[in-house]
Length: 288
Ligand SMILES: C[S@@+](CC[C@H](N)C(=O)[O-])C[C@H]1O[C@@H](n2cnc3c(N)ncnc32)[C@H](O)[C@@H]1O
Image (cartoon, rainbow, N blue to C red):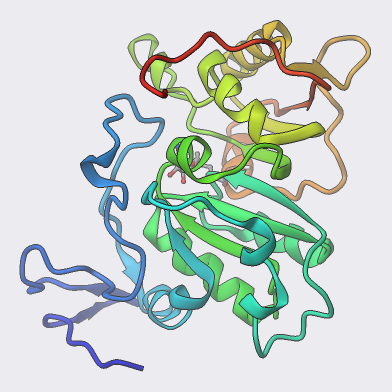
């Protein structure tokens, strides 16, 4: 393993503060890149708030040791072969009996506790877990290691760029979006992830019949999700009454869900399947 030097590292109550790291040097040299797609893809409206958060000693350790094997940057430069990404040769030395037979994408895993639980409960499913949150990436890598899970890959960056540039058609067996940032203020609604344009981008990456599972504790966002999903020609509600779905047993309580429940919020699940055929796309002159 190559050696690298960090600036002066101060431990503050279990967290690492790299207060003298020279400007411009990466926080984790072999770990997740800051803003991996950089200016390659101009997206002014993002569904997340870029933030610099403290990384605990354990999370930093997991990032340094495990990122080269289990992490990937969403830089928009390569198209992913998910079979290869989750194949047994990608996880040498693990106890995986076989490579996962299906792959689901989880967008916005936060600290990753629910992701790790779902991966443990269903080893035949590979989870491509995406977030921009560095402490969460370290936390999920640590959870995967401690629980001997080889069916998680941690992707760093904007899920929109992953879908647009790095996934092949019909490569996903499902998508999970649990408690996405609700952006409650009207002027921020355009930042909400679940929008018609997002669904149009997502649908071709899903196999026909694959399910998009969303959950939120923010009532107005739940109503918005139900409206845009019901109106979108590429998706069909799994519920015959056209409404919310009962909470599926396989979805564990997530960290944000717990916080919402503590505030007395009501949680809604939405389960929509990709239609057998996609609606016609208008031609995009920027993609010859
Ligand atoms: C409110 S948190 C929910 C976390 C977790 N699912 C839970 O329920 O505890 C939403 C997460 O989505 C991530 N996120 C939002 N937009 C994203 C995007 N376009 N690509 C990747 N991650 C995104 C944020 O960084 C944040 O960690």
